[in-house]
Length: 111
Length: 112
Image (cartoon, rainbow over all chains, first blue to last red):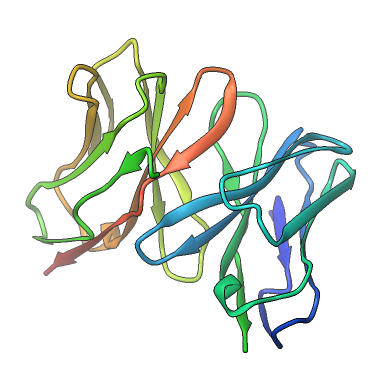
């Protein structure tokens, strides 16, 4: 089963360009999250969504925006990519109960 | 400021022995704690959780202990197996606020 699909899996982009990462879920989960993983920092929350068109900022939201026009899709946009945004990005969903289900991640390199 | 801290970046243990992973938190409002396991090139997967109304939860080889007064929890893996080699993340949340705060992770290596 592919409950959560992240695309692309890998991307190299140039500084200053906009980048959009996509998270697609088939679980009909209400809650969706974007995290970034960096050495020494673990997973840090970028943005999250409690439902369609209902989003809020996490702890490291500067330089990122999100949109959720459908339950199944949660998009993360880097307005103007910088080298500090080189990271591995994980999308997660949450249904009833507390456990998150994570996607396989997107490795983004900004050169 | 990181509210969940895993101060040991790595742990090496012999196969068959016990692995003990530690996690400290600073937010006294946290009342739900989870451990996730992550293999390279994969997303984290849920391992075990504990509510603040308990001090111990066990699931097979995995046991989580919670010491609320010390704001400390630990994960015990007994016996450790080669497949346990992974990065383990501690996470915590406040009640109905579903946002999880994660620690930096501990890389466990199980030696044959």
